Length: 255
Picture (cartoon, rainbow, N blue to C red):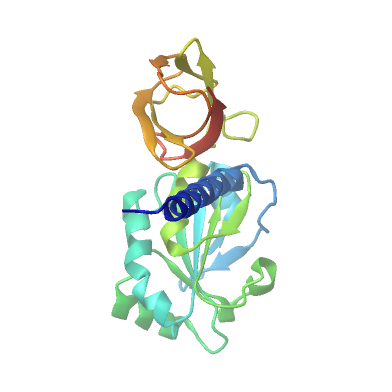
């Protein structure tokens, strides 16, 4: 039988884990609201055509994903399928997201980049920095791989490969918002009910957690809808996932 000490210790660890997860999810959303702007630059492809970050992508209301790689980087090889998936999922650079692969090793050229594309089956366009002006200093690139996600408002950050899809979703959610931020929904407690306000017209997947990490309520809500919530008095954590964009919002309620 579990001792009281062991139970308390386990509950504390679980509570800490839940809080860390919520902080992480909030960080994804906070990135989308950041106003630190990416530097502008142009890249010339192997045919001599120059493409500009702002003019050709961001100013068109699109999100840029920069896959910073080296032809000799093993992690870069193994992550090509992930970038290929982003490319095909978002319309092969013809819709709301543009994927660029940028080779940054000091001793490479377009022949090596072409071999990389053939060997590892890249679908997205690749550029080589050594045959044009470098963006290494502008983007503070010190290793490979980097995965920069740049929102239409110029806010950007380097993400691990597994977090890029969520970051893309946060950027897409910015489109059409006049105040240059994502409209954050608010969950309100009223007379034993939960009310969703200040939300977009999308449906939100709601999950409510107790402080010990238990799921106490799950449902789908839209703006101004109410949900019966019979629970003990106390503080609860919640997660709202926009079902159109995948953007996650988190918060807490006092019931």
